[in-house]
Image 1 (spheres, rainbow, N blue to C red):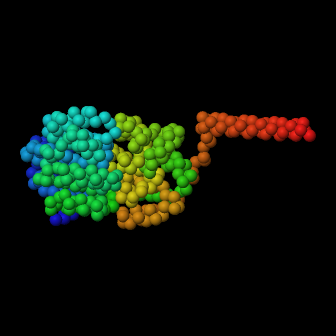
Image 2 (tube, one colour):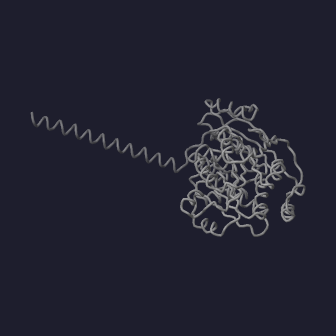
Image 3 (cartoon, rainbow, N blue to C red):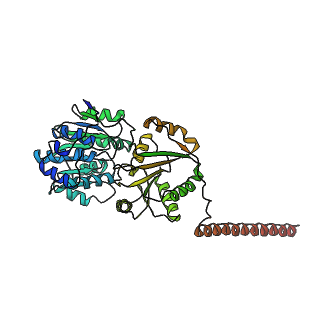
Length: 422
């Protein structure tokens, strides 16, 4: 069964327990989002659900409220699978914010020591929020078993498959008790997700809030056609032009993100970076600093596209286009949130026209191409770089000098020997 009407209402209209309603109301939640209005009633009845909705539509409460309420009533344990560490921590904060006192949770993610996570699992948490890789690792070690799990939610399922978690997800779903409730949420619905749902879910209620590629209407989108060598100069011009609010910049690679952040700091802007080469502590500090305004700019790889919970990002810049057109939707969905207006600007090289057409086909909209602004002059190399180049040039000049002297001595030595022999 598929539902797609944009219905809404209030939390107290649904069969949510009074204790929950009081907490939710105190937190400022009153009006349901469309995904919440359509998912919560069926989920509270224990039905399997497939929800197709973009990031930032209120999915966490849509599956979180039914999960916590059903666990309180029927016991057992809830398991939430997510693609990234940042999203796992974000969901834990959101659930603790609306749950009754006493909710025990455990976050199981890679990149940090498993010791505290093992300790949390031994305290029999009500909800486990995990990335599939680390969870399967702890299952193999005999640290964690799925025998108490009676509700499983897969959040950002398409992204989990994109990063290669399909084998681990299948293993978890095959190992978990058959008598359970399963909910799956995804921004897109590729064939692999459909096959997963048909294999591991029982007559799921399919809820589609918006067609694939749907973006918030309050996001203004633009692109510049620019050569690779001029991207940094264009970025410098835009950072000068858009100085109000936070700016999120996406790079395709972690090495590119590091270089871009370094160059932005040399432009005298406060900037941080988040990518897989940074430790969990560094990534957490970067996100918190960006959210609090300590850094005006954050440079990220796609690892952050679905795990950033910062409401006031005014500008998203795609320094590099993403590998997949779906990731374009997730990237620019970081701006224009909570009713605010937002702007998304993409840098496109002349050879990337086909990628732009794919994006336009997905979002069902043509992207306006703007003329390049006057770009700042290329700056001279920084003093320490100039010194290193000078030393390098001096070294090679000295080397050539030694070689020339050596050749000269050899020629002279050879001439003397020949004369001596003659």
